[in-house]
Amino acid sequence: MNSNENGFNHRSIQINDISLHTVIAGEKSSEPLILLHGFPDFWYGWKKVMEGLQDSYRLIAPDLKGFNLSDKPLEVEDYRLEILVDDIKHLSEQLGLNKFNLAGHDWGGMIAWAFAEKYPELLKKLVIINAPHYKIFSKKIKKSKTQRRASGYISQLMKPNSDEILERQNFQMLRFAVFQNARNPQAFSEDDKTRYIEAWSQPNTLKASPNYYRANRSYDEWTGLINVPTLVIFGMKDTYIKPLVLENLSDYVSDLKIVKSENSSHWVMNDDPELVIKSIDSFLKGTLS
Image 1 (tube, rainbow, N blue to C red):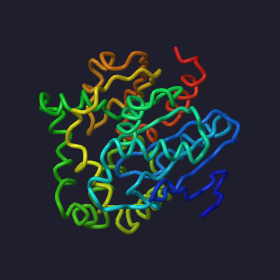
Image 2: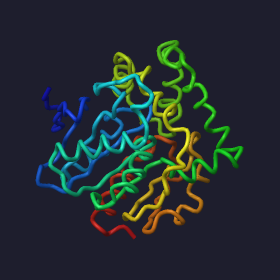
Image 3: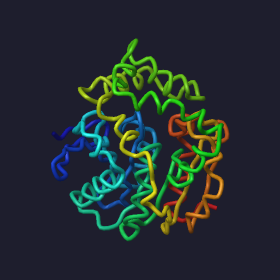
C-alpha cells in the first residue's frame, strides 16, 4: 500500500513476518528521525510535530506492532521489549538507514530507551517524551505510592477481557485517557478524535496492544545505561507518569538535557506542539541551550 496525504507518504513495510504501516515525510536526503508512538496511540500522535519538522528532516512514523494498520499478532511473547527493539532495527534496515535519530513517546519512549541501550552505534541522538526510563520506573512503582496510584490503569490492561473494557460505551475509557486528559482545549480537534476512534476500531487493536504491558513486567535483564546524547521532554501535568521519574536520570544517561512543559499533560505533543518542535529541532541541530 502506498498513498499520499498532505505530503505524508503511507507505506506498508515488511519486517520479518510482520507488516508495519509507516508514514514518511520530508526529503529522502534530509536528516533521518524515526518517531515511535505509545499506547493507545498510533502514528497520528506525531502529526503536529511532523508538520513542523518535515521541511528539515526525513520523518518516519510507524504504527507499532499491534496498533492501527500494522499487523497485530496476539501472542504475548511477541511484545517483549527486546523484540520490539529489533522491530525498529529491522525497519531502519529496510529503509536503508545506517545511522539515525530516534524519538519516542510513552511506550515508544520505552522502546527508544532500550534501543539506545542495545544499539547505541546506530543512533545519532535520542529524544524521549513523557516516557519513564525503565529502571527508574521499576523502582518508583515499588517505592512511590504516587506513581503506583497513577499507574493503576495498568491492572485493567492486564485483564484477559481488557479489549471489552476498552471498547465499552464507544471507547469511553480511552476517550477519557486521551481527549479529556489533555490540558489544552485545542489539543485534539473533532477530526483528530474521529481518527483515533477509527484506529481503536481496527480489528484486534485492543486485543493485541495491551500485550505491551503483559509482556514487560520486569526489566532486570537491562542495565539501563544510555551512552547516546539524549533530550527528555516532559509534560509536568502528566497524570499517568509522574515527574518524579526524572529524578536521578543522569545516573543512567551520560549526556542528558531536560525540557519541561509546565502546563502539559501526558499528551504534550498535542498540548504544546510548538515547544516539542522547537526543542527537537534545536537539539538535533546542536543549538539547544
